[in-house]
Amino acid sequence: MPASRPLIPSGLTLLNWFLRGWTALVFVFLYAPIAVLVVFSFNSSRLNIVWESFTFTWYERLAANTPLIRAAKNSLIVATATTILSVVIGTAGAWLLHRYRFRFSRAIQTLVAIPMVMPEILLGISLLIMFVTIGLNLGFASVIIGHVTFSFPFVLVAVQARLQGLDSSLEEAALDLGATPLKAFWLVIVPSLRPAIMAGGLMAFTLSMDELIVTVFVKSAASATLPVKVFDMARVGLNPMLNALSAIFIVATVAFVLFSEYLKKLSR
Amino acid sequence: MADTDRPMIELRGVTKRFGGFTAVNRVSLTVKAGEFLTLLGPSGCGKTTLLRLLAGFEMPDEGMVLLDGEDVSHVPPYRRSVNQVFQSYALFPHLTVRENVGFGLRMQQVPVAEASDRIVAALRMVSLVEQADKYPHQMSGGQRQRVALARAIVPRPKVLLLDEPLSALDAKLRHGMQLELKRLQRKLGMTFVFVTHDQEEALTMSDRIAVINKGRIEQLGNASEIYHRPRTAFTADFIGQANLLESSVVGRNGTTARVRLETGLELVIARAELPDAASKALVSIRPEKIHISRAPVTAENVFQARIEEEIFQGATDSLQLVTDQGTRLHALVANESATQEAFHEGDTVYCSLHLDDLVIVQAE
Image (tube, rainbow over all chains, first blue to last red; front, side, top):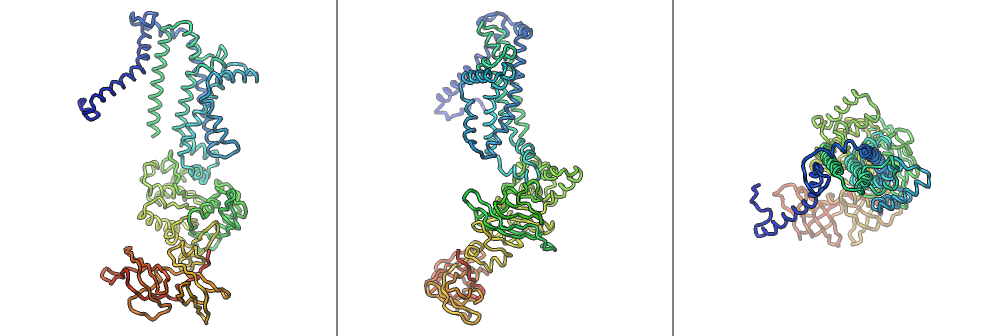
């Protein structure tokens, strides 16, 4: 398409330019801070405002920072466990709520959705009180339980939406052809839900990776996750090492999103 | 029909309720091995529930379901040798045609080599061998329907259930599939139970038809019996079209009886139609059984009528008649040739009715 051809009829050229400008502005606001952050991760100055010269120092220092590396490992462990548990609980829960009618099923449906909107600080405090009451020592288990609490409803909701659009005869067809209810679920229902399960799982992973407030309440020193560590460091003072860390995170996130888009295309 | 009269399905006083609603009400029915039985009725009459009771998706509240002599009333669907073709086809979207058709064999743990042969044989039967590696969403409605059919027959069930499988197809394709299904059923010698609300479909394919209304079997018989000798007003009206006329009995002599319609028109009917004590009778007349001519005729039940409305319908002419006494009748006349002198609105004609074409039915 020739660049000169207006997108909107010529009488509206002014509006057209205004809209283009507006769009550009939105993108600047969205991405300029990120761009600055990445650029300054290669700055040899300690200050995040003056450009001195190009360096990899911060990345090297980052690689040598054992506590940060450990926190990153913790985050990956917690996020992976949270994703797996959320997918299992969320999918099974969505299926049970969809397939069977039982007492209080509507109430359960509503109660399950609440952790998604509950203030995290409330969730953190209540979880901490509960762990203390039942005598669970804070550690990985407590962090993972905390993360699953607010993550699995996202899987459940995504899967439920997909179930609503699913032909209810599919399960019956599987039973009819000799599959037990468990086999029908595993061989027919789960594969039909794959896109929703993947989307929900991705959501759970992302939520868990950058969760801060709940984690602060239920972590132990050994199970502190990356956001907790970063927050602690930032309180002392901004450090270009954090820029480097963020840049790595951004690259990983973009790669992750591209990969999931690729998977979506494959499954079609 | 099969060479044996062995009962394949037996329902004994089966009742199914949903809350306060009785969907199936004390139904007893026997289907012979190799028979093509159609459950015909309007939506909500209980025909689908009856099918689901046979498949095992519902369990009866009362009564018994026997499959090949074995009580399966409370056997789950995955342990019954019964397969179903679903109205929505219910093909597994993530599996290829081959995998869909092979699903039942996989569940039965049939050896791979044998399974593969049987899948190909089934696909050949529905002429879909070339499409074996496609996914359901890449196929047309008619093709999906045939995949569903192949998937259901490949495990060699004792009974094949079909839940309005043709309703999503267009008219031409539907008619072709009706004949195809009938041919397939004869070839396999398999017992088919077919559910439909389409009377034409039922008449075309079935060995016997069970007319279902309000959870009960209204009438059971072959297509001709159901059409020509309906027992109830519901059957007469639901299958084909019928003029239903209330009358009172005014006399009996020998093999005939006289009835008088509310308008005063008197008709002669076969006496055998009428219970001895009856003083009232509901007469059912098929529209195509009313013979119409311009000239006076000598026959039974001759009366004059005026054509109030004439609608050209291609093969037939649909006429609304009003007799001299004021009885309204719907008649169908074959359009035999384009040059033939047609009937027109306002014409006065002679109508005649053969004794055998007046059927007395039970009111609802």
